[in-house]
Structure formats: structure tokens, C-alpha cells
Image (cartoon, rainbow, N blue to C red):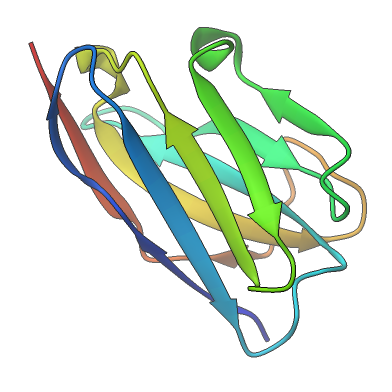
Length: 121
């Protein structure tokens, strides 16, 4: 089992930055692909970014390319999402997720409880 705990959410003005962290426990996630998803009020959860176990491959949804950066520190069992140039439409609960095997935009088995990000205009 893998337990994931997100942190770093909060309220920020449009154009600002936040860094989300996802700390894993239970098992080392160095062999797991990791991802961030988000769910805005009244909308379905959507994929945001993913990173391979080595960190060598990353994927982003089009709407965050150039603004968000996913990274990982396997020594710390932690994944990060650096968010810059935030927009009100980025407001959502952000979830960290893990899956065994190749990086993908779907098929994640383990999920955190989420952290709220609110961007004011």
C-alpha cells in the first residue's frame, strides 16, 4: 500500500505561484509513476501532470504547459508541482496519485486526500 499526503495549497492572487508537495509513505515510490490531478467545483477530475519513475519523462495537460512543472525527489519520496502564472480557472482541489509501471494520464491506483488551491482574480 502507498499512502499519499498533499500539502502546499492555499489562496493566491492571479499571476502568483504555489508549490504543491506530495509525500509518500508505506512503500517507496521510486518505481512508481506519479501524477497530479485536479477537480474544480461541478466538474470532473482532470489530469494535470505526470512524471515517470526516473523523472526523465513528464506530461502535461495543454492548459498548464509552460506554467506548471512536475518534479520528484525519490530520496525524499516526494513529488512536487510548481505552479506559476496562476489563473482563476486553476482553482480546484489538487490530488496526487501513484501507479506502478509506465507513466500515463490514467490508471492510477493510489490517491491522496487532496489540497485546495484557490486563485482570486
